[in-house]
Length: 105
Image 1: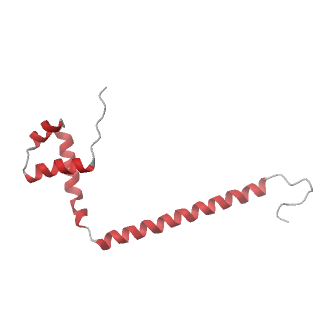
Image 2: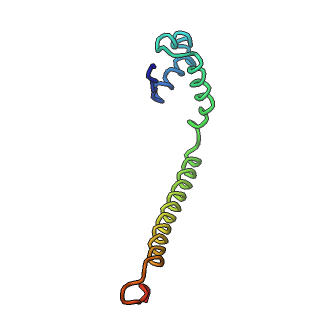
Image 3: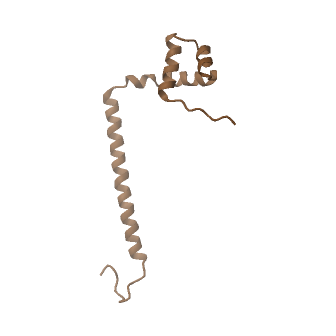
């Protein structure tokens, strides 16, 4: 069985840009790099769909980054709370000490 090839995003972009700029035809690119035309068509469609993101304003990106940071803080806080609750739960379910006193007294 043939091993799957992995292509970098830079390679994919360059190949598609070669076609869109007219430097090479799609058939020529497929021959040169031993690619199937369906794969090349998928790369081209992906680039065309996401091209607007290149021109996305810094404000939009900074809002997204702020939201990501907020969510990361929330996840961190919840992880700490979960750890605290696990420790507290283990104290309540552990057997009482030999002297008969509760661990919380």
